[in-house]
Structures are given as C-alpha cells and as structure tokens.
Length: 256
Image (cartoon, rainbow, N blue to C red; front, top):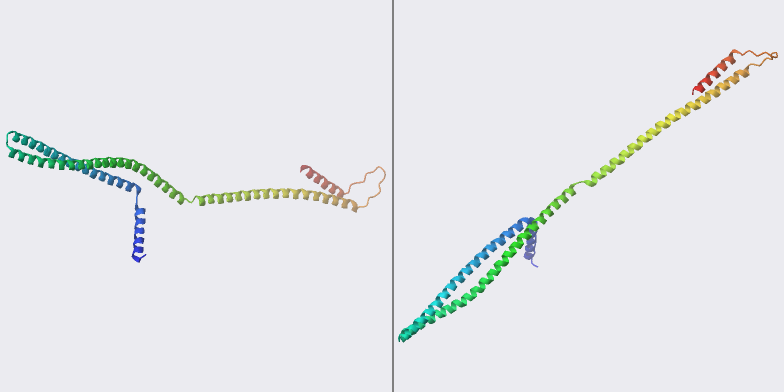
C-alpha cells in the first residue's frame, strides 16, 4: 500500500470520526425529512410534466387520426366525383397522417408506461415520507430520552456518593468512640467514689481497733489493788477518759 493511500485513509477516517461525533440525531432526522420532501416535490413535478407531455401527444395523435379519417373521406368523395387524381392526392395525405398517428400512438403508449411508473414511484415516495415522519418522531423521542439518561448518568457520576458515605461512617465511628470514652469516664468516677467510701469504712475499723488497743494498754499499766469484799474499786481518771472515748466511738459507729 502506497504512502498516499495510507494518508488518504487516515484523513478519511478522521473526517468520518469528526462527522459522526458532530451528528445530532434530531437535526439529521429533520434534514432527512426535508430532503425527502424536496424529492417528493421534484417527483410530483416530473409526474406532472410527464402527464402534460402525454396529453399533448394524445392530442396530436387524435388530431392526426382525425386528419387521416378526413382525407380518407375526401378520397372517397373525389373518386365518387370521378376525379381519380384528386382522390390519389387525398389518399397520399391520408397515408401521411395515418403514419404520423401511428408514430404518435407508439410514443403515447411508451409515455403512458412512463407516467404509470412515475405515479407508482410518487405513491411509494409519499408512503415512505409518511413512514419516515412517524419514525422520525419515534426516534427523536428515543434520542431525547437517551440524552436525558446520559445527562442523569453524567450528573450521578459527578456525585461523590462513596466519599460522602465514607465520611458518614467515619463520623459514626468517632461518635461511638466519644460515647465509649464518656461511659468509661463515668465508670471511673463511680469506681473512685466507691473506693473512697471503702477507704473510709476501712479507716473506721482501724480507728476502733486502735482505740481498743489503747484502752487495753492503759488498763494493764496500773496494778490492781486488793479491795475489801463488797467494795467497788474507784475508776481512775485515765480509765474514765478511755471509757468516754470508747462511748464516743460507739456513738459515732451507731450514727454511720
């Protein structure tokens, strides 16, 4: 394949691509209907011209046929009058008109066939035009629907739905984390309060035990003196103080 053929093919392919991309179905269909209507007008003009020509030939044929008949009658009249020479001339004229009529008849038959074919073509073109108009409306409706669908798809493709949904999921996870942190803080606060009360309760037991130990130590430091039978030993001031502290501790414990 020569270089020129290759370049020519590339140019034609590019031109076809440009033309195809520039074609608007609705405009192309409208233009096709206009072209068919122009063809129909030309076809009607052609049929009208053929019919007019047929009528002229028909008139010429009828006139020639009439002239032939007239000269036939004149030849008979001249022969009846005994003028053979005039009758011969009349027959010559009759023969000429008859030949002309025969030629016109052949032409008329041919034109009649042409007119009939043109009429059939005209009817076929009218039918095709009517069908094309109906099909054009249907195709234009489909083209409009396809354009609307394409615009919808383009709009949908431009929407970043996946990213938006991912953002929703991230925010939901963050809210869950915040709720978990809040719940954990509340639980820690409750545990701290509980531990404080436990410490207080544990501290109270230790204080009581310490007070009891102090009382035992105070009581054991002084030797008991034998007293006469029936007498009650007098309480020392320190023992009375310890007893008072024990009573006070008991009172505090009862109020807890």
